[in-house]
Every structure is written in structure tokens, then in C-alpha cells.
Length: 353
Image (cartoon, rainbow, N blue to C red):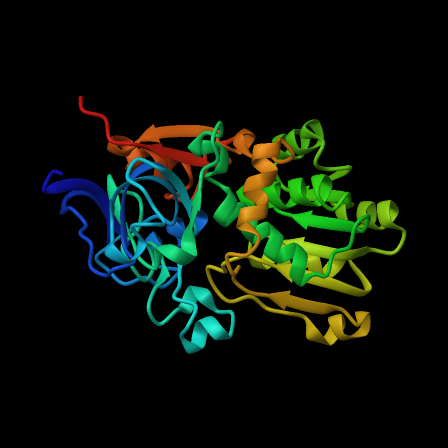
């Protein structure tokens, strides 16, 4: 194995660079060293670089990834074999500490989020700590990129669905059609058989959701009659609203369209504070739930992918090699403006040029 590798490093002060780094090494008996076969750029990565989300610097970013196993710690030699491919949860957790017992696996005292509390996957190789809890084998006949979005985008959507108490056949409004929004719509339609109302500012995204069959109704958030249209569709407002973007405007949309006695479930990582009009919301008897996903349901959703029930490859709209990852960040909105039509940027392995 070589001695150095390339990796994208966040240095703090809104600065990133592609650097030469030491190769990761086995540090604990349950560690796995993996060659990163595919990773993705997440909105959370953008928040970190822009200074809106906490992360220790310097740090290799990236928490959505697949690996090929290249080295295995002594404690997991029977579980993992060199050459096998795995998709990895964004959260490494021990399952034993106080935070894990509370279900806050992302705050594990012996792990934590890749690319946030420990070195991430936007590099040639990565050390996967607590490998027993966070690695899922890529099924035979399934490509790594086909399951790349399962542990974060789909699992976050599932978290939002579950914390909202969605039942089969419910009417649900989804605000925001970024990667999480699209994945939420897909789960709602294909697994929960819900009536889905998709709401966002990008007409192209709305039409794509309709075309893919994962939204029954689409409403442009810039439409001056947006609230009225949702009321017309539902008759009384949306009984369940899942908000995926996390800003003042999208949350106000949720407050305005939720029905009396309804539920607002937000899965967003907020880039700053927002104002909540409790003085008006209280009269709706509305409930608000929020939080960070807990790496649940991943195995089941991988099976859905294998069975052809779920397909998120439509969201992988842009692709760059690790060599050009900073360009990928720019495509995904590093400078405040995402490239039109860009849902997700996939980062492929380093290319010798």
C-alpha cells in the first residue's frame, strides 16, 4: 500500500484544498481500511465550509461513500474480507456509550459523523471506525453508486417520515426537492403509497418529480397562490408536512400550509436561526418535530434497491473525479448558487493523468 493519498481538507475559515495526506492505518481492532469507490457531496459539507455547521479543522470532509475493503482489523477479520464492497453509514457509533443509548448515534462518544467528528471519505482511502455498526455489504449484481444515497439521503427521508408518524395512504406535503426531498418523495410513494404534494421553487425539479411518478401534485413555492393551491388540493391544509431545506422561507411555507392538528417534520440541518410564529401556530394545534437521522432502516432500503423497488440513480446528476472535487463543490453551490438541474454530485476515484 502506498504511503500518501489525496484528500479534500477543510482548514477552517471557509477554506478547502486537495492535499497529499498520510494513508490511514488500523488504530483499533474493529477498524477497516477502505479504498473509496464512490462518494458524494452533501449540503452539510457546504454548510461546514461556509461556517454554518460545526466541524473540527483540519479535517477531510465527506460522509456519503462506498468502499472496497483493503485491510481489516483483528476483531473483524471473520466479518469482512479484502476485496468486498460496502456502503457505509454517515455515522460511526459504538452502540454502548450514553449518547448511543439515547439514540443519538451521531454524537457517539467513541465515534461520530465521518467528515464532521472524524476523518471523512472525500479521499482515496478512509479508516472506518466501529465497522461492526456502520458497514453494509453491497449486494451481488448491485453497483456501488446504486446504493450510495441509501445511508444518508434515503435514511434521512425515512427518519422524517417516521418522526411524522406517516401511515400508508396519508397525504404528505414535501417542501424542498434537493436530494433528501427527492428521496423522501420516493419512499412516500413507493413504500408508503402516500398522496404526495411536492413544493419547491425550481419548476424543473417539480416536473421531474411528477415525471418520475413520485409526486401526485406539484406546487411552485414562488407562486403567489401557493398556500391557496395546497388548501385546494387538500381541502383543509396538509395534515403532514416534511420540510427538507432548512431556512426561514421554507419553514414559513410549512407553518402556512399545515392543517389544524397537523404535523411538521423537519430533517434539515439549519445554516442559521429562524423565527417561529408560535403566537399563530398555537391556534393550529400543530406539532413540530426535528432532529438528525439515526442510521436506521439502511439494510431494508438496500434490499429495496436490489429488488428494484427503489432507484435513486436519477439523483446522481453530476460526476467528477477526486481530482476535480473543488469544481464539484462549486457545481453543488459552494459559492451560493447551485448549477441548475444539479441534484447530487458524485465523486469518483482519483485519476492518474
